[in-house]
Image 1 (cartoon, rainbow, N blue to C red):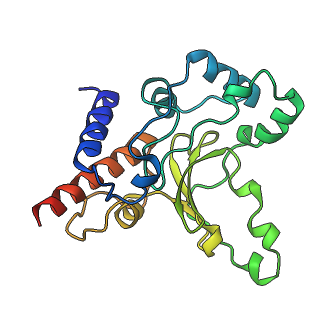
Image 2: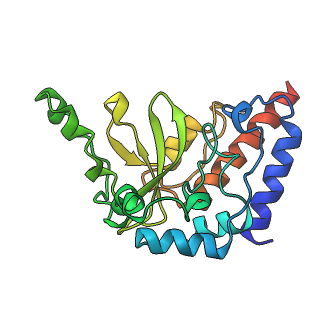
Length: 218
């Protein structure tokens, strides 16, 4: 079974098992997905932003949905697609030109000196998340960002600057803390590397299914 079919199957199963929305954030999306995008939609977005979306994310948009059910409070979709003919070109470019600049990080970053020196604006400078799309929020100011441009393209990182925790990879260690509250679930993998989009999404599905099955046995 290919990855897209497996994700769809697991999501359907999770929606059936979690009919009362016990999984964190599920009340927000209720396991619903927004309509898929067309190839033309994506081509227009990529052309305007001067980027190429990572293949896994692009396939998700084409075959599963443009946002909806997912980690945290759910996936954000690509915005502005439906308004492509009415948004002035200049405004569109100003909003998304940051996407074409490469994401600068390859390891966790947190320069608290920028805050100590009363330079909050410097700490929250968009240059640290350029080349990324915010695709989910876990609440409390913690966002999952997908790297679009640069060496880390296709990987998920976490923007946790609101809590003074900087920006760091969405590793299996992170997912264990945010996708699962059951200490019995311990994947045996390198926990320092950022997950790809599919691996991150599948991790949420698998942990959520495990959590629901465990709670149903109690």
